Length: 375
Image (cartoon, rainbow, N blue to C red):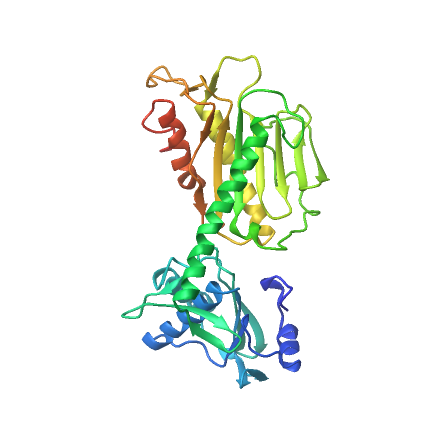
């Protein structure tokens, strides 16, 4: 069961867990009934979920009778409206924990007549530690082999340091890749000139041993940036799998760790040093949702950090494509590195998520915001 996607879990998997008497642990907890909809029930639910998220993730299974942590029987629970139950839990996770816990998934498994088994899958959170803050309750929790335990000062210190380390690792990875690309060391030979670089970096990418099977993905999943009506190809490489066009102007690399790197020429070599706002923005908005869908398909955990960079762009100007456009100022630096943007879930408004990054580019070109960013 624990190696399957949540949607693939069946009653046979639950039966196997009970028959093999798999005990409760850091990653597994059994409940005979669903947490009731009252103050105590809500608090206990948040403690259980935040404890998993603050530790290594895990599964909470409703409808299992246990004795001293050992499952003894499948009882099931009656659920009148599963969607309403999920909505209640989602609201609790959004409002009763700080920061909100993302990526928790729920599965209803048929058992007998009206009885169901509810499986809750909680990922190890990259935004940990999470504090339960419901009513007058304010405390951090983790899990040990014996169940939920309050986190002490030393535990919290380690958790906060781990969070800071993640931010450092993301920036270090990004800076290292930008340095290589700027020096011409791209993952396929590319024509010289100004380039746009888009990175999507999951926090889980830096967990030891984290790898994904990339054999099944194809060009429709990860089209290269700004490639229209051109022949494209894909092949495995040392880092994972790469998608590229035959004119050496664009490629997208999917790393085995779940990171995506898209690199493309900003404008053709020999053209004047100017790039059009509409085409630049639209090209990124077209591929971004496909990249997010791919990472979701691979079950890469959220949040994911999106990083947009422009390289070798000194003295380039941004054209708004209108006679009424504001005055443009050439870029005064060779590298324009926009702040990282956090994507918390697969269903997002791409325009809203990337607006801050686009506006930084507009500001650097002497504009109050990026042209068309309010569309």
